[in-house]
Image 1 (cartoon, rainbow, N blue to C red):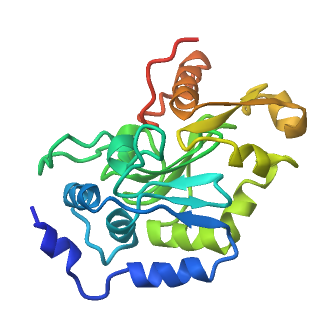
Image 2 (cartoon, rainbow, N blue to C red):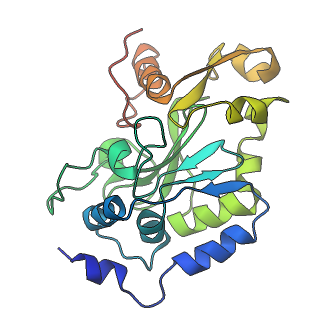
Length: 246
């Protein structure tokens, strides 16, 4: 297991490059301040270096809000009980750094406000019923309740988001007042939509749906429960979702 110095004190760290990339992006974003101690512990558990964008975000941020808050990228530290969770909390890291622990299904890297989940695959995606290659980014879609292969790695995914990928990816989900509704959310809340997004009615006209704030963990738990009710494969870990029975 590499120590913190080996992971953090590397030539060519990604954070200065990412900072320039964010500064040049037209996609609205906010970088949340880090708690250095939490970030160091998260980097140690992940065992990735600060040369990688994943390591840089883990070490230098408390998360990043992208596309005017629609999408939340997790950083190495969290914002407390009312703030954005940390990567450690979302992925269920052990309380103390454990060299034998790995997120075998995959590492959750972001959620959107509708309960969509971005994750990086583990070493054996097929074993866990997930598409794509090891380390590739996949997306759990609330309008299909299935995982989809984004066909890109983490670095490419970040560039895609900042170059307008978020706007195109979510085009069919948006409604005229979405920014106002997103701005009103707490960082542990999402937007619950009815009729459900996977239904014909939910996909016909987002402006005609009923939407309300709800704890994101409740939305994620509902998605997992709906997969079972509809005869779909269980999606695996979607975040810190509780048991949810329909």
